[in-house]
Image (cartoon, rainbow, N blue to C red; front, side, top):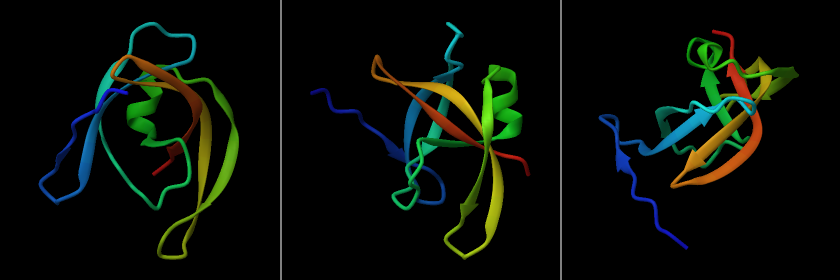
Length: 96
């Protein structure tokens, strides 16, 4: 098993470089993702970053945030690649 090295951003959040693409796309885009141990989903990203990737929408969901707020999210199929390993799952797309 290969070890992926991350870093910390200016706010002290642990981060990791990932490549994200649509499940039918061959051109991934590199992002620096924040590792959130309280997040129970696959991937969460803002609509402005998700839209250009052409992620196919699959539905909606309600998310309860750490502060108790409920937010509606779009769901889209996405492929995440880390160190050459692909994983496909549902990304939560923030509409704000």
